[in-house]
Length: 236
Length: 365
Image 1 (cartoon, rainbow over the protein chains, first blue to last red):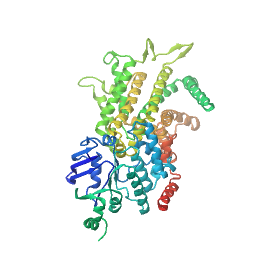
Image 2: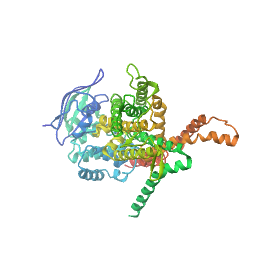
Image 3: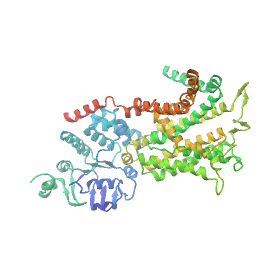
């Protein structure tokens, strides 16, 4: 059984239908990406799955039906969203941000171990752990958002546009970290404008157009597809 | 060991100081100042309550005085000739706190989705509604006695010992105001203790997270709805407690005491003292209670020096008060005695350098 199985997801902002009948699944340990143009419904999908937007359709996650559950309950089930624009707590320190990631957890000793793990994955955070997060560069904030999400021991990590607003060199660094997170066996659902990078780190992908998946398959196949190349990879 | 010893000594000195303070004030400045001191303690409790809502959870509440009114009127109705009910304080005070908490939830529930200015306007309206209700609930059934208010409210009794009268204790004549001082002090210490425990708990951290970014807090598994309601309820309960104490101390309540200006004063206390920092909030409450009283002497001073009163001290008081607030915001925007967290939030020095360094880090990669 899939870790996440979404059938006929529909999300609307008033009368504007942003997602209309999306089918999607992510298996345990799998990294899946959603690619598509602006306004295709990628971000909306992630927000709806996280419980931040009301949605219709059947969402099954780790044996639970998610429909209608509040966001904080969904987060406690292990479906963790790193929102677009990162959503860190700017006036808390790095350490406090990371501790907030573990807010819903009760296993204090394991939290301590995970903190060490995050610091070893992201040594830059360890260096600056007593500093105010709002003073960070975009790349550092993205690292912090990733670290904070990992502190919640996610069963499935959802990343919304992790490359947005970052310097090109920093995009490489952040995707290097995402690659390491995938290598550790964390299941991932990635939304990304930069289709090339997304298809490189993920095993499978979906192409979204007008709120529905028009193409799906293994990342290598999608990357080789002439239509995808023309539309999203900037190749002729 | 040494540091611990010093902390103990400091606590002991503070305790002794607080214990003899009313007698010292009575002897040096007269009995009126003991009364001012009592009010300072009441306002400190109110400020600590509002501090939970505004300082911790970041929800701007401009109708906070309503909870004070709810507590005061509940005490007044259950311990006065108004209905001929004379319940003891140990029943009415907690009941007042509980009813205020309920009103807090009543205010919180419909305003959960509001933030900032919008929330401020709704809470302001709520405060006024409560006051107007108190003012008009004398018809068709007379409950609150309208604008005349409720008089002859029972003083706090412990057994046969009334705090409302002067007593001869240990060969000393102890006035009622001093007895109330000790009661208020105990209540304030309880409020401080609860505030401290909340601040350093999971709930306290959740409040800070909501203040920073509500959506992110929800995404971290914080049940933001309940946690916000809890802030309203806890803050309101402190207000209700202070209200009950106020009613018993004054022996008289009327809607006049619960107007918008009072809400704003309490907000000023926590802003001036240092939002979110317990010692700062208490300092702000004491200063803003004592200062206007002290400025009354400005009239005497003018008469003494200039031979006549040039500026009416009442006008001057508000003028100096306004000036003090403006200067404060200019030179100590985080408050007179801010918490380390607030200081960090407001600090500008070093920010630019750190940000530059952060961007350099991106560029080096």
